[in-house]
Image 1 (cartoon, rainbow, N blue to C red):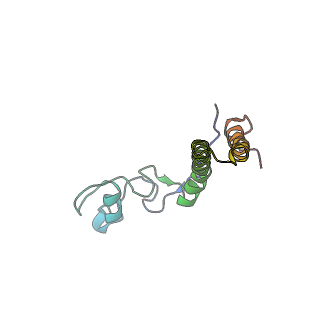
Image 2: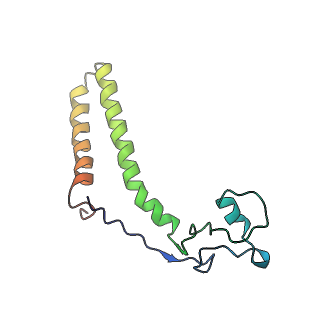
Image 3: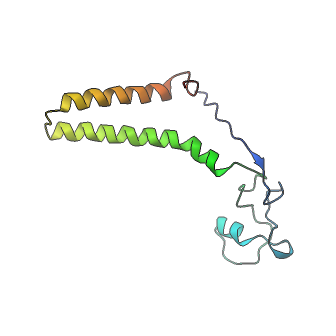
Length: 123
């Protein structure tokens, strides 16, 4: 299954595209990068940049969030619908048939979107 996920990478201004943080005083790594690498101490040299994870190119946080929000929302909807159907079946709800029809339609749409060959081209 070919995913066609593209990342828009931009030159990391924090490390100057080297991947190594030297923005602290006298060429040391800054405190933010030391903390991002989960190290103890204040005077360290040659630590991987915490902004780009040592790649020299960074992807903006908003782009990463935008790529993850649709799948996470789909997962949340799927589990809540399945839970609603299960609870209404256990409680013998008089509206079970309507709940099941609504849930099945919505679940079918979500599954069809993620497993279709045209994923991402549907607008």
